[in-house]
Image (cartoon, rainbow, N blue to C red; front, side, top):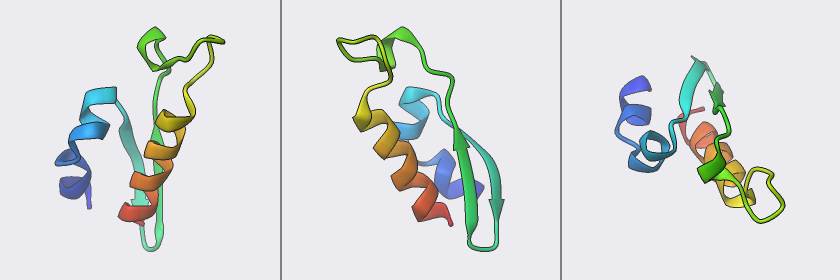
Length: 59
């Protein structure tokens, strides 16, 4: 499954890392940087949902 994650252009672009991949489970991490934030200075919801979507796909 790591190969599938490595081929995910969006995850590579934002700098996300696949930290755990097992039977029916996956964990993706990201160090939030300024280019991941929205106007209030917190991580943009689209980034959070993209990470969740990739984790679900890997699991």
